[in-house]
Amino acid sequence: MRLTLVSQDYPPSFGGVQSWCLGILQGLIALGHRVTVLAPEQPGSSQIDRRAPWRVLRVPCLTTNRFPLAITPVFLRLLWEERPDAVVHAQWPGASTVVRLPRRPPVFVVTHGRELLWTPPEPLARAYRWLRASTLQRADAVISVSRFTRELALNLKVLPHRVHVLPNGTDPEKFSPGEPSSRLREYLNAEGRPVVLTVARLVERKGIDVTLRSIRILRTTHTDLLYIVAGDGPDRGRLEGLVARLGLEKNVRFLGTVSEETLLDLYRLANVFVMMSRSEGFDVEGFGVALLEANACGKAVIGAREGGIPDAIEDEVTGLLVPPRDEHALAAALGRLLNDPKLRERLGHAGRAKVVEARSWHHTAAGLVRILEDRLGSYRVLRPRSGPWPC
View 1 (cartoon, rainbow, N blue to C red):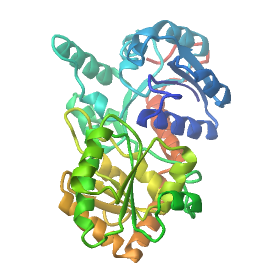
View 2: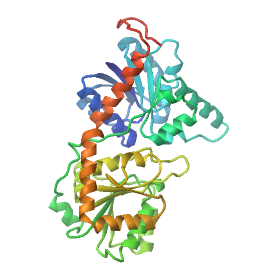
View 3: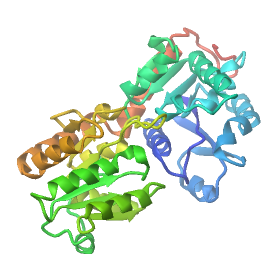
């Protein structure tokens, strides 16, 4: 197929949607499909695009939030020149214009979570909610990264048969079991210590404060416990203050943003990975790809039973689910895994197997292709390349 992927969140910026784009693109190219990407112009984008095995068209815009408006003339020209079989929008705002065209290719919109909840203040709120709901309702299909995000789409009155759950994936070749570097172990003073790891952007909803309180509880039985937090963000100052108030300076290390090589080493170093994300207003965890990355490295994981995390963790099979905001339940789950190496190994092994068998980006891309082909086939139209779209 000839496809167009439209995203206002795309490298060199980084985040969950950017990871989804790269994973899906790599999977689609490996499956033999031709893809053109439309993304905003950013500093350093030319170096990224030269290395990509797909075509990237950059759209100048002052901020990524203005991308849905700036894209229209470039997008219409691309549709005329390339006549793609389908257009996949990584976020709904970019699709708000094309779904209203009288003659267009089939449009598929991906939903991740937060963008289905956030609303601007009045007097724009009502118009914004109408535009979001009507865009998703007009799309040929909505692709949700978890059952949680599917429910959000259904709440916007999207027809159930048009909403498909397609879980995120990861790269089991990039993230794999192995020994961490001795240099990292020495730098972190981790030799012989149980290690708990979180990889996340430091914002309140990630629940790192709950994990810190659970570490204080665990320290009574695991005095040498080491909790490593990789990532940066606006909540770092508050979290460092909490570490001081809890007296955890010897047990907690904030590493900030780390390289891909260091990230892999951290996963391999950890005994347990934790992600206690919770819902904070419109800010939610739509899935939790880092949980799959840790599983792919053969590590047991613990996550909050909230948002899309239950789609990333199979409870008691690839990891453990605990109530959000409950440091005592988390401390009990951590203690259970730290005290039982065989259980850690069983969960980590099952997590790795599930990623390889069903949760790689290759599987996600193949699932996307099945949804596209099924929807395209429903038109029952065989069109020539130069002919009109079936819509």
